Length: 197
Image (tube, rainbow, N blue to C red):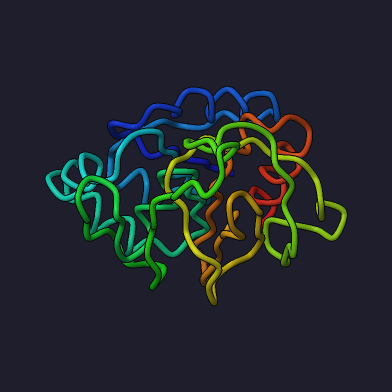
């Protein structure tokens, strides 16, 4: 099985690569479009900012490529957010539009509401695909200041300030707001489930 990690200006590419190595998977980190098209599974990681990332993806033609891929693709954190239609980050950004929903900024309501949302939270209302029933109410690791509201593509939810999408799924596109590569044994199960798709 050939697993490719999309190489672009994102921060957590090598932590994803390392997490896959722990599972015995040697992934290729590449920006080569033919290599990405030929992969059995593609991972689209992301740590950074939506506007800069979208400029980079458009300039490289990677925006069109990601949308045309037909094998299972997993977007992580910012990867999930730029797979949505639009983001409030960076003064409103049009994104890839794979998921017809928008990304909104967390607005703290109480003194204890800290933004960014950083740390361990439970996933709930999990659906088939990346998740099994055993993953209901398990803890995963988040770092983000923007969130995707619950919508028709929501595959798992988390509650922080308000309920939001911890994961999205549509056709061959899967995405997590949390970082499976930093979520210990639960994250390993989720990555294994993705690799089995």
